[in-house]
Picture 1 (cartoon, helix red, strand yellow):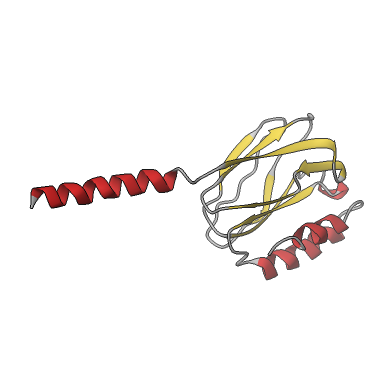
Picture 2 (cartoon, helix red, strand yellow):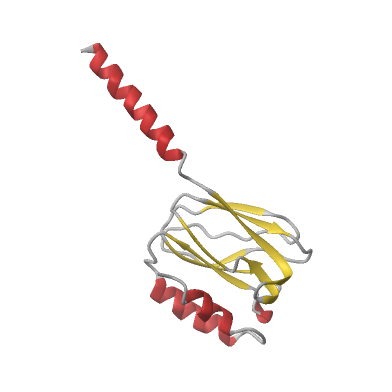
Length: 148
């Protein structure tokens, strides 16, 4: 009987350690010039798994990272200007992020975590955000078009 319990405990420990090993860390750079033009996140669209970590890295000074849209139940965040920020995204859905200093210039990005359960709400919020952008308002629509 004790050996059977021991096997179950060892199996659970192994399963927990094995599943934790699947979480990945991704990096998004905040830059003045990138593949999509000026004032962008690189990459501007990222698809990851639930539980993965995203590190937002300041490559050019004068930026921050703010969650503008998150799925229901997910935590929001607001980074400090000129400081990297690491977040673990543990709710499935679409996250819209921005550098709130440069949102009018179109410095926005989209992260899809697993299934896009809040895509309709994200698209609605993106339409409102785009109305306040002086430049590159089309970016959000382009990034959201990549959500599958």
